[in-house]
Image 1 (tube, one colour):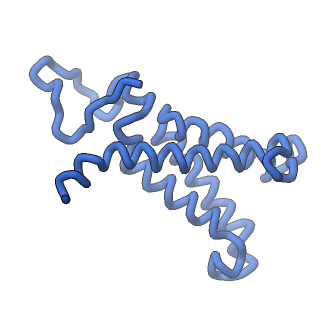
Image 2 (spheres, rainbow, N blue to C red; image 1 turned 90 degrees about the horizontal axis):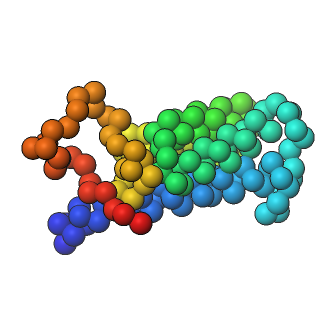
Length: 151
C-alpha cells in the first residue's frame, strides 16, 4: 500500500498544484474583471488591483506548472501580506478575521516552493534548473526526480 502511495505522490502533487493554482487564478480573474461573482477592483488601486493581478498571473503559472517555484513564492508572499495587513488587525485567528483563504493559500504555495511542481508540469519540458552541472548520459535517471509525463 505504501509503495503505491509513494509511486502516486508526484502525480498527486501535480493535481494539488493544478487545483490550487486554478482556484487562485479564479480569485484574480474575479477581482480584475468582475466575473465569477467577484467585485471588480479599481484599476491601479493599492493593494486590491495588484493582488488580483498577482493572483491571476501566478495562479495561472502554478496551474500550468511553469516557473512553479518562483510563482508560488510570489503568491505565498502576497497572501502573507494580505493576511497580516488586511485580516490579522481585525482579530487574531483566521476563523475570526475572515483570513482563512489567505492563510491556506499562503501555506499551500509555500509548500509548492519546497516540493516543486510534481511529475506533470510544463517545467519538465524546459529542463532542470535545480543543478548547475550538465547531466551526462549515465546520470539521466535520477532517483530524486519523478519521471516526466508527455501530455
